[in-house]
Amino acid sequence: MPLTAWVSRLQREHLEILAQTYQIETTGTLDELRHRVKQHFLAMPGQAEPPTEPEPTATSDLGSHSKVMNQIRKWGCHFDGRDPLSFLERVTELQEEYCYTDAQMKAGLPELLKGEALAWYRNEKGEWNTWLDFTNALRRHYLPRRYQAKLSREIQERRQQPKEPYAKYATAVQTMMRRAGGFTQAEKVDRLYENLRAEYKLYVRLTDATDLADLAEQAAEFEDITKAQENENRAEKRKVSTAAATAAEAAPYDRTTACWRCKQRGHSRFECKRPARKFCSQCGKDGVLTRECHPRTGNAAPAEDPTAPRPESA
Image (tube, rainbow, N blue to C red; front, side):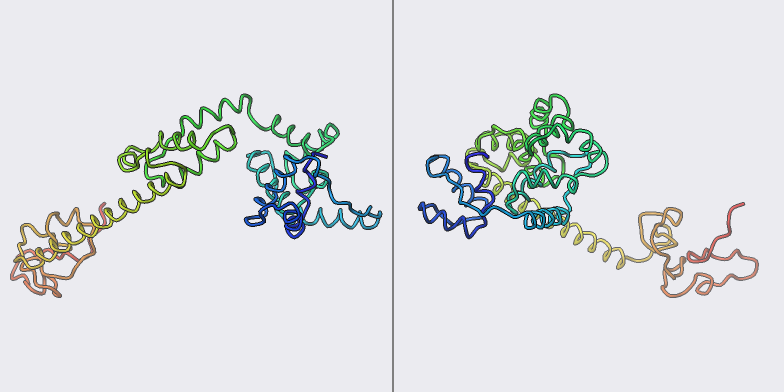
């Protein structure tokens, strides 16, 4: 067992007692506390002695195994051959939170794999002695050849897309950089800034972005300003459109320029896509059909009715 592997099995209350014993800060999340305890014992290996535990009986061991398997099933975390790194990241998070050992995780593989991945497990499991053997084999089998080189190119080429919010862009790039490993905070900031859209760079100042949080804050400020400007422009357009419509309604009716279907100007009844209105196309009077307002006399052709149904073409 690795020097500090037993720390991952401790519940928070035991970790806090251990931390207080060695004067280690106990605040923060469970992961942060566990990390500080591990770092302490790595620096002081002579103190890294796991607490003694009673030897389990056969009955209690069987019950514990069933409980672990049932809990792993309840996670709903499965790998079917797609996106292996996301699976490994998620299953590692769950292992740490539930304080499961590598041996327990290896035993739970039938509940974690399905489909093509489960068939692969059945064929290869005899070659794996540890959980680490499994994770290494999964990477070799499911990650493409020269994965690291491909990932490095993707990080270099991943640009913020049109209309893509900064948060979504940053999450995608930071995920790739975390998986690639080896990036310092300054390098992460430089890479995210380099592939920002041009309009962001006009506002965001790299000299003021000392870390990822500063860069994200400046990008969010720019997006808030842009959104406010867009809302203001839309409101102004609606105001202009309303004023134009009001002016058109107030203008005297002109049958030569008005649509005989909707009474609006700027198009003919053949181009009209607005709802039909009931009005006289000859004088513009509302609420009356043309044939009622201007009935024909003698053999005169009836006036055009903008709302009357038209016969189907042959």
